[in-house]
Image (tube, rainbow, N blue to C red; front, top):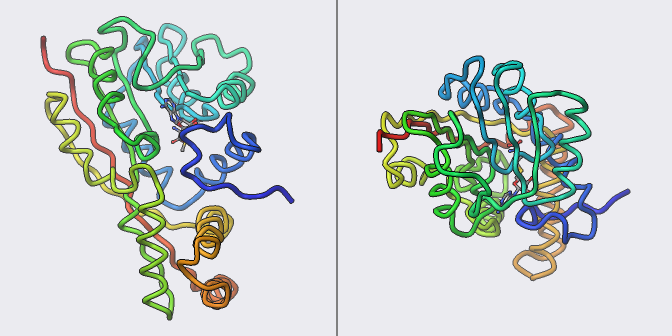
Length: 270
Ligand SMILES: C[S@@+](CC[C@H](N)C(=O)[O-])C[C@H]1O[C@@H](n2cnc3c(N)ncnc32)[C@H](O)[C@@H]1O
């Protein structure tokens, strides 16, 4: 079986020892209850229509870009950018011959597009992987046309709730997991960060996400291994904690949940 890798490595997927693992990661990361709802809110807030041009930053394997391409239709266009060549190759493969979509490798903080190029821009689960989200948000504001819409979806890992009998170990795991991300608390910062970019009519929506077992294994199992290695928890403590969580899953009482934020707005007139 392939080894799991830590989510913080999303900032440089191509330099990991198994970049394709992150495609599997993203496919599982779309499954938790609440994610589709949160993404639908982002789409609704953007108010996309036929003929519009849309930029998706940190597009990953491209599922959301494809959905937006079907909304803007043949007269519109969707561009997905991602820092990872592996992600862009997979997004192109999945898009096949869809005519109104293209993908390219680019850094969110240095977009290869002119000012005011897009009717709408969105970034989903990207900013949690950037040590400083401001360059990416400045670029979003720059390439969106006046009056165009912006939607940012991101998570807040300090909101992680785990129903577990060992409260103290759970607190250690939750806090260290959030701190292990480049920007684990970015969800709650989004309203402030978007207002800094002078967006108008900023809306805030929060959705509770409920994580299924395969995803728990991917992100908590991997983090627990790190905690054992750096001696934050003992191997015995970690094993007992993990076994209790597995029992909860077997008994149908697993509750692992966190908050996803969607913050959206419009670029003000210049
Ligand atoms: C967690 S995935 C999100 C994928 C998709 N947007 C979604 O929500 O399903 C984060 C993506 O951001 C990309 N990424 C990370 N740092 C980036 C950067 N500086 N510029 C552009 N993309 C970046 C990663 O390669 C990865 O594909």
